[in-house]
Every structure is written in C-alpha cells, then in structure tokens.
Image (cartoon, rainbow over all chains, first blue to last red; front, side, top):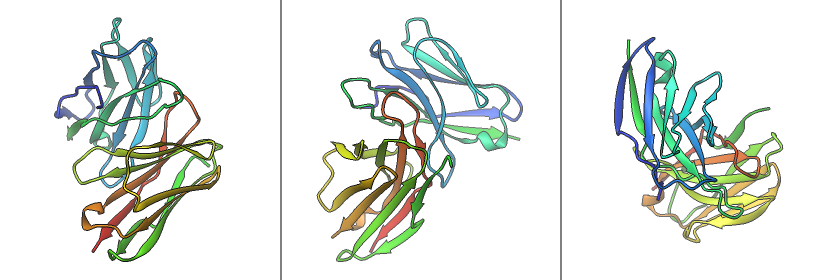
Length: 112
Length: 112
C-alpha cells in the first residue's frame, strides 16, 4: 500500500516549469516524502526528499503543504532528459523499517 | 564511488537452472535492498538487509534466496524459477535510516 496518489500522466513543454502533484492525506508526523524518477531502461534515481519544510537541490524543488497532506515536485525548466516516470513515496519511519514502497507514479512527457 | 553496480545486466535461464545476481556498492551504505520490477509497473520491494542482516522479507517465494556476505555485497540466488519471474531485478543501497536510496541499473532476467 503506497498511500500516495499521483496523476497517471502529465505533459510539459521544454524549458517550461513542471509541477508534479502528490496527495498523501494519511501521512503520519514522522514520515518523509521522497521523490524518485525512472528513465526508460534504468533504475530509479533519487530526486529529493523532505519532512516539513520546502527543499531545494540542483535537480528540483519540493514544496510540502503546511498540513503535509500533499506535496509538489517542481522542475524549474524541463528538458527532454526529464521525461521519465516520477514516483512520490512516503518513507515509513515505523520501528527500524525505513523501506520505500513505490506507487504507480506519473509519466512525464516533455515536448520539444 | 557513488554507484551501485549490478551484474550481469542480462540473464536468460531455464527453469531448472541455478543462477545468482550480484550487487556491489562502495559508498559505506549499511542498508541494501532487492526490488523486482515487471514491465510498466512500479518496483516491488523483495528484501531489506540492514547491517548485513536480513530485516525484511516481503513474503518472497523461497526460490529467491538473498545473501549479504559483507557490507559491500548483496547477492540474490535463483533456483527453479518460473517464466512469470521474468522481470528487471533492481538492487539499491542507502544509509540506515530515513535517507535516499541509490539504485543500480538492474539485471533483466528472462526465465525460459
């Protein structure tokens, strides 16, 4: 049970920002939000993760709602290389099990 | 070294064969994982090792046998597989705790 909800697919144009939404309405106070992406024929790639505050790194920004029931991954300028399946994942902090359980993800298409 | 290396990249095996998949990392990560990914589906967690000890087995059939000989190596021994076990097998590693995973590119397994 991945416990996150994402749109099946989204489209964007090259060099435009992309906002990928994720709902996680049953998130607990200590669960982190992770984003991974998977390009065709490759393993998933870590993008970003956060707990409460917005987070930025060289790949993307993560905006987490104040109630933590949703988050948005922001790609500031999409390139053709960003076309991938993007997974939003809650990392369960229960006990010592920090496993990542993948949901269906969002297939992002980037148009030239 | 910031990579997880998986060998072989491709493997074809018969249902009576015994084979092994290998995963190696030199990032000092003490948690390692096996995932299985069928075509057009998200990765599914199979096993988690933490400090070289098996901590999670997601009810995986016994024809899959994991082994963690040391902190850098993770093996998956395969025996008497079925054609439906054909999939991409992904290895990942991380620090123990709420942190990002590094995935390998996977071994594409075909059972004939």
